[in-house]
Image (cartoon, rainbow over all chains, first blue to last red; front, side, top):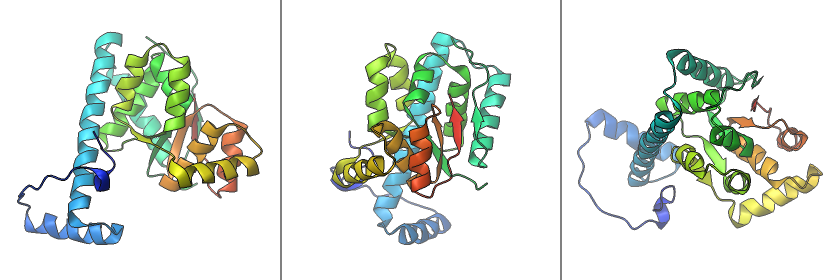
Amino acid sequence: MLLGSYHWAVVTKRSVSLADEVASAVETAAKEDGVSFSAWLSSAAERQLRVRRGLRGVAAWEAEAGALTAEEIAAGEALLARLLSGVSGMASRVRRR
Amino acid sequence: MSSRDGLVYGAAALRAAARGDRIVWAMHRAALANGIVPVVPASAVADAFRTEARVDRLEGLLAGSQVEVLGDEGARRAGELAARADTSDLVAVAVAEAAARHNAAVVAARQNALRSAAGLLGHELVLYAV
């Protein structure tokens, strides 16, 4: 598996159909990022696959440790929002299972 | 205070997940749900696997992370930065360097090396200390 290394991967050609506006936006984004149309699409697909696998990883942990509660999910979202807005923090109380 | 585009995990974040820190798992879930794939320097992965028995949990967290290998150039940059920061903590330096490069917030232990390296890179450290 060579995720994250498009240039080194064995390349499979596929014919894909994109809505005009999506294709146009991808073309612009690829130019801005200095990569080819195919490389940009491959990178986006790779990211989506990683998100998918990651959420499965979270689900596997929840199956063992107990599902995250609505309160915990909200706390996680709030922490992420704080960090992305540039606010540092510190773990106050660690709850483990 | 400026916004960040993503997350970088240090070894302590991986340890926290391995030990079942629920807020770390909840934040990781929130990141993925928002299309953010956290970055983890390979040296932090090595350090976590050195100390943690629950590798299954580490694997679960890393399934939704992008592990970055230093490579030749990166290794040189990290070594030089560690020298300037006067530290032998190459994991902390790699985390700081990745955070600066990705404009990311960091989830890691509170360490002087992390702050020093970020400062030398001109990057204001946004840290969730675990």
